[in-house]
Image (cartoon, rainbow, N blue to C red; front, top):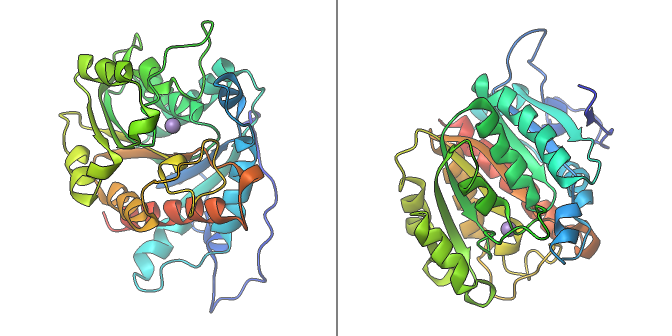
Length: 311
Ligand SMILES: [Mn+2]
């Protein structure tokens, strides 16, 4: 596809005794065989810029890939994990034009195509405008879905001057003419980063939310099942994680969730039969420290894949 580009990622020398994810990706895919999952980058931060945030998330897909490619498959789970990676295709990054609406359309078309084939898209953002492009995949494929978001913010802000941004994706999804967003579920919220009007908006649309202090593995897995939809789109905003562990994000959070909870939630999302797609957004390499946030994002995808391999 001409709207995708792929960069070469540096890898250690191939070693059959110590294969890395980058060596295994897509290895067993041939000709017309359908992958089980696809990885796609969405290097956009124009939505962050429009939202008054600090740009830099456009560099995230490349940095996350570098970390993910050199990880080993799970040593304890053996063949199922390795087999999944060998049947997962990394199709590269969307060639963004910094025109948020047009870029989201492109991402939506790509996601729709895979959803229709029951292939699980795994998207590396980008700012959280990624999530609306991700949702457009469902709208274009005319598939109803609930949305689960792990985030410090609700991201249901109104548009700015009629324009979408990184703080508006779930308002856009809930109000979308397709009616494909059946329910919005959000956890990890910071009380100092949420307006009352945002909560009213979620209540008005029969959504559900949990603040960070009430966000644990029980409440998260509860939200995974708090909907009647046959599908669940899952999106993880890295700014939900404590700044100590994720310094490189668009909007850092001084008292966020811990990596263990975050990664366990990613694993559970992978395990959940209803979860049909996943994204991790808002890593900002410009402010990262020794690749901490990029590495945690790669580990997030690793845990999602581990869960997916065990379905
Ligand atoms: Mn967000």
